Amino acid sequence: DQQVKQNSPSLSVQEGRISILNCDYTNSMFDYFLWYKKYPAEGPTFLISISSIKDKNEDGRFTVFLNKSAKHLSLHIVPSQPGDSAVYFCAASVYGKAAGNKLTFGGGTRVLVKP
Amino acid sequence: GAGVSQSPRYKVAKRGQDVALRCDPISGHVSLFWYQQALGQGPEFLTYFQNEAQLDKSGLPSDRFFAERPEGSVSTLKIQRTQQEDSAVYLCASTRDPGEKLFFGSGTQLSVL
View 1: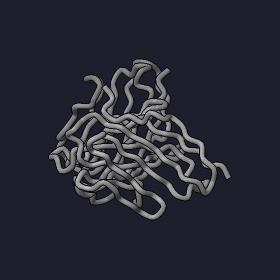
View 2: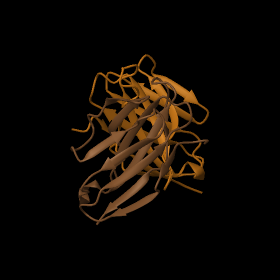
View 3: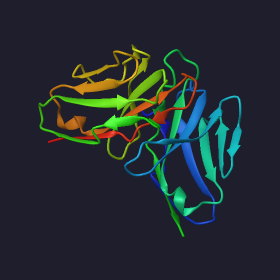
């Protein structure tokens, strides 16, 4: 069973516009959520995170929103830039567990930002 | 080094062959993780070390998979009698503190023919 789902495998957006990536989870024990960005032939790199005690976290052009009741989070990128073209992974964990940051990832969304 | 280093970058194995994949974490990073990423999917957890102790190996898909980190730094993921379904990118990640974000290496792409 997939505990973290990204239902849109791809997204195409014009440069300067907003990119919205969505993620749903089923495990109510998850209390820490992250977004990772991945370029081809590279490992995922951390983008932004949010704890379940918050509903929004912002870092520059990137904002993550968390709706715990709906078990849904989203990543907004404003404005989108061609360098944002990559695969974005949503990930979740049970923060602070002895097993460390064991992340459960979604399947990814490929974003293409057109100049 | 500046980041997590993995070798080899690519590995082609014949079915039934044993392979060993190496991970050099960032210096001083206590926690080390192995993930498996199949084509078109997200990474899936394999195993976790804190220093030399393997605290969680619940994600290892079979007893053909074995990981070690004998001195608490470099780690090796070994796959015995490789099968075609083992073809994937194997990612290593490390972190200084279990509560901090993971830093990933570029991965080893394993192709089993």
